[in-house]
Amino acid sequence: MASNKNYWDGVKLAEEAALQTTTRLLAALVNESLVSVTSEDNVSSVFLGFLKEQNAKPTRIMVHLRWGSKYRLEMPVAQHAGQVFTPIIVPELNPADILDPIMIEDHNGLLQRLYRPEDVFDIVSPWICDDQEVVAKLRGELQNSAYNQEKWLQFALSHPLPVLGAPLIEWEQRCFRGHPTHPMHRSFFASPPMQPIQIDDIGKFLDAEIIVILVPRSRIHLDGPFEASLKPFLDKLNILPVPADQVLLPCFAEQLPAIHAHFGTDAERVIVKTRLCGQRQVSMRTVSIPGFPFHLKMAVSYTITSAMRTMTPWTARMCIEISQLLQNIMPDPDLLWVARKTAAACSADPDFERAKHLSVMLREDLEPKACELGQCLVLPATLFEISSKDRIAHVVRLFGLTTVEARKDWFRKYVAHPPLFIFVFSFLASL
Image (tube, rainbow, N blue to C red; front, side, top):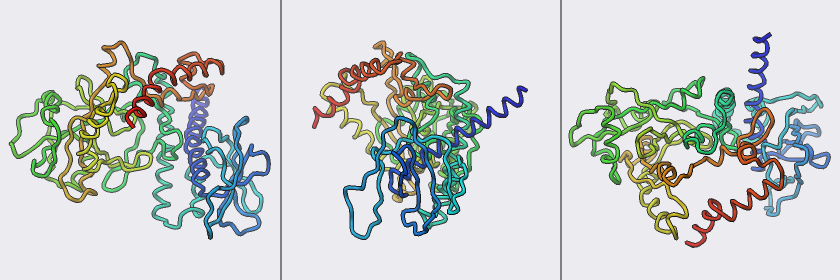
């Protein structure tokens, strides 16, 4: 009996993970006006179809919306000659308002339930894209996102949401569902020369292996006190001094194939006795290292949500100046803390498409400052994680916001008081 229960629990989890991606896909199609939207009632459900459909009985997707959601269909305000115009949904469709089952109605009126994002994409891809290479890549990213989401939901079963006072990295690593609206909210998708990463254990994945490479100094831009700041990190690894014309850089272990492909094999891995891991933050390319006063932000040539998470040379080289600019325009540095980028290193290759695969930035860790003041840092996205069991947001449970009035009071407090007021005041005052 226990094995049967475990099986069905696994099936349920896989379906929930797939629907997390599918609902985001459908909402994006609607909000980006990539499909036609019609309704046969008071918008408690909508039908999605091909914008240029000419068949009398077209294939369409039936989407049921959460009870109490208040959507309406309107014609777009801006219209241009020669374009096909169909109603748009107002306000923008929230993926959380889309309910299972999602039904496909074919031209014969036959209905079929679909919940996997790649299966839904197979229906809509002919409507929106003729490039089969692009279609295959998007399909793979959607499938990858749903697969990874299942592993994240498994991880959530044994890792409760953090409480106030928990370390910031715990908040960073408990954002189980990723981006709230992006269809590729949990993708970690490989393109050549990168090898696909099969994420079977989120806990192990979040402990990212960091390696050190030795590169010619003449081929690297160094900005800020990069080497001096990195020295305590390297000293822990007992790395011997290197020639003056060489420089040591950290990178993700999985990034080495991209570095060799775009920078060259003279980027040589340094063999160390101690395996070093950094704790991935929610962005996946920034890591925290216990005892090191900086966060390491490093290029990773995988597609995460909307883009390959590399860093162009101008991004790396301007980070120090931008950080200082933000610091300078603050009316009071105690109003809004800036996690400054203090040093950076990147490839000096003039072709930024190659150079972007080798970049490192050092960012201040502000958690010790908060601790000294008796404060704690939290990741806002994790506050809005929804329990799979009772659909209650973490922020509701954490602050006891069990009534509408309590939620209004809490919202007013944070609009009229740090951090929201501080954020708005700091930036408006400088304009």
